[in-house]
Image (cartoon, rainbow, N blue to C red; front, side, top):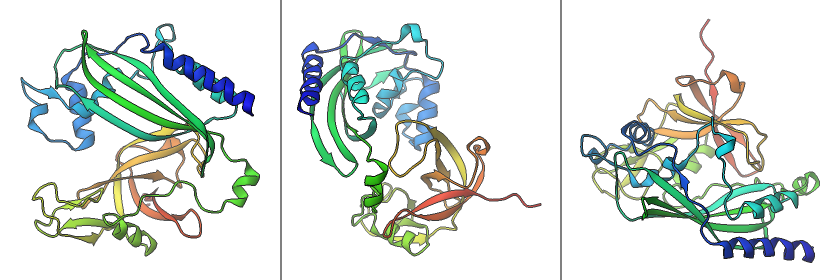
Length: 307
């Protein structure tokens, strides 16, 4: 074990010493179509992102460097820490869960700007014992450039862990991925336990909002209550999750954004439906799945069509 750790840490030290990797050109320039899709999906109606003098939402910086499904293998590039990730996979650290992501924006982006990005590995810490299994925390930084000008940065940290063996899982009854429950969200999870789908309501202007928060984004009131939703909705968008493995879930599975008639959207798994039959606009109804003796999660099942 010590020999393996020394090998992994040596690879990590080499990647850190390598500094910034090569610049990778974004597949598309900053454009209005992509911005429109992003703002619609996020529900962001800021007028600064539309019109002849529009700028790009800073939070979508990572979108510009994402490759599509039809990526060209001949143009693929390796980052400084890819050797580290390969070695972790070979050593059995195949599980992945993100733990931290911090963005820094230097300025707004204008239409037509062509970006490049480079990646620098910052550090690796481990092995650490976690509820998911033993693993290493890997941290890196991505910098986006317009020409030679840095315009944004992202610090990203994830845990590469060894998934618990079936025998170990049998001994660990609690579901490992548990939601954060605090003063803002407790009413929602109390509702789930009671079989109710609760939506936060502003005590000032009456606006409904989800996810819950401490302050109304419309009137800034801190007064809040909730209403009980009908429990139905339609699939607004969805993805099929294939990789990485998720503790307690068998891949592939569908994660959807569900639009409720009350006017908010919620994220949840689609169950009781073959993956190939899920579609945008599909009517669904909330269902509650017990993950362990204490945790129940709301999920979404299709509403059968009337004969």
